[in-house]
Length: 534
Image (cartoon, rainbow, N blue to C red; front, side):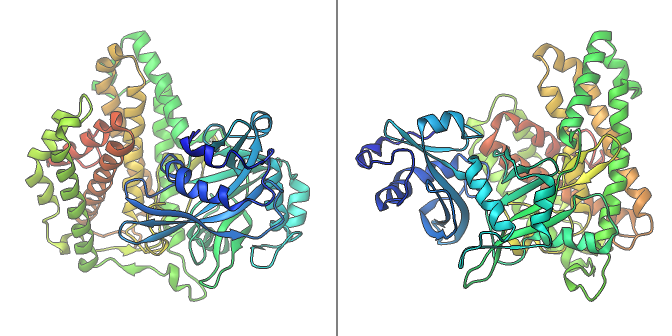
């Protein structure tokens, strides 16, 4: 909760647990004293590393909202005058209602208003979510507000049930369970045009080439003079055991427990004979590799003149642009490590120095002739693929969250990329999972388990790649040359790891050693790009 010292300025307003008129003093108070801190503390805000010049509740979206609630578009203006918009549903509630009705605390509490009231994220209130569903069915449309798209939504909701529950708030978007078999995904950062996730999933559904995604029933969009923007999508809930990340951590934890109990970690690392839970996960890694290959082949399927999904050749010019973008990312990383050397967390200083000392080797990776990276195609891809973006059904995987990298503008998320960008993301995710499982162990166990974690991560990446190759063998989306394949993948892994270091140093410094080790592994040309990177 953000307790602002300026609450005295509005304490005279008698809100009594609601704000029927949403007085100007309340809006001004939020803009001046509350929202900047709330945004910076929220997972969904993409501008944490930028200087905010102004943040205002620029537009109120009309609708039949509960008396205490309002739906705003918040406009963020940065120091470079670039602007972004975020969906900002707000509600005023009493302390009693805060205790009994508001879900997702404390993340959904925006600020306290004097002794009796609080402002909260309105998505945490069942009444506001019910109002959203009423708009989705078309039963409560208001001119100039939200509008729905989809067929038979009233019937779908009637059959599935309309009870709602806030599933997550600590993500880049909000997820709401609807009834027994539906979920509503609310995009915190709506952008003009068709949301890329809706576009990609619609393409996959229509092509019928990839069934491993949730069915989509409809969506909500906000109309404006600048064009419509998608703010929510209603999907079928997929029965699953958890996401791939949670499943990986569970299997690794059980495997590590067995190794410690039997004192066989050293022999397991040398012989790569892992406990049963870790072996099962390796088999699933191969299966996930096959599914990822199937996804890429399906995204390359075109019909009816769909230029937005038509594959294009991956040329030397494209490779040169990738090299240049990665070079900029590496130089930025080196500058950050040099400037922040004194404040690096324990265990990172020596790794950072290895990266700084390996500058020439890293840049040499980017100095290969662009023609050596050419070949294959650029296609629409997932764009932000990692283990948490797949649901584990126990027997298979379902892919979710196709909106791409949230920090990028919609135009860049819609751009065609080499499919190996998704591959690099998944390889890094397996490596991260092994490192995260290792971090969770008591300090005295880590040294015993480190080598087996390294060995397992290398094996998992190899199995994922083999599954991917099984599915994509001979596919024109990939380079014919194994050398071009390796060069592309190495650069994409370097690009990913460099971004991870910057992220961890900004938000989770104690984890920065994980991607730093990955960058260090790329400095040594005798080791493959996807091994020994914990």
